[in-house]
Image (tube, rainbow, N blue to C red; front, side, top):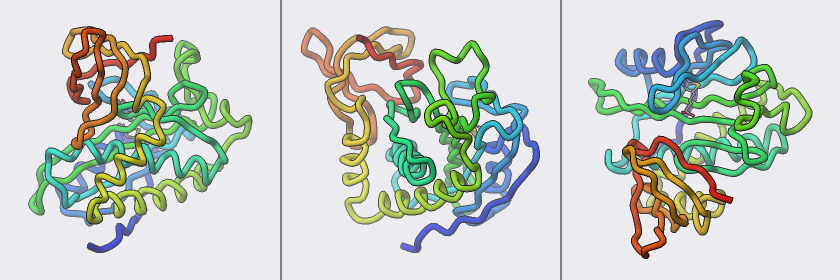
Length: 251
Ligand code: BTN
């Protein structure tokens, strides 16, 4: 296995860095090609939600991956990415974060970063487009999101240098991705995720899953990254990211 080498293509404005990276993956670019935009006019999140992306207020980043793991394990890529974001924010900003399954990085219990992994079939096999949005400045957030979202500026009191965050992120992604794909790296990554996330075990949650509300206590992860929730009647419900619309902590 060769280490992930990253190269960065920069844009002033794009609809979505994930859409641009998808086009590049279909055109055959190498694994590790990154797309960064200063703003997005059609940034998107999981479940087709909007990702508001004002000019220079956030980091809007996508990377083309061509993973050598079984497709059923692709959800691990989102978990791996959340560890890389955690590492990068610690390195570049001295900021400690929490991870909320399946795709959020939190500071002070509020969302600081969202991760969107999408797959695309290309001539050289299935690629994963890993999109990461990090709120850098306070103006990245509309006022109506103030109770649920936060920026690095809001969490540290300092406007971060976006280039430092980007360099730390590409470095951390390279390390975490290579580690995940090394022998038994998936198990090591899952163990690391459990240590990094307050949501992994023993957290009381209310989850919207396929239109149903499931209340219970988190009970670790399955090997494919699905979340286990222990319900009051003693059953374990296995939740997969594609079916879950919301995970709420219950006080
Ligand atoms: C989520 O929280 O639901 C995921 C948000 C992902 C946002 C990033 S910003 C860069 C990349 N381009 C997009 O359109 N979305 C991702």
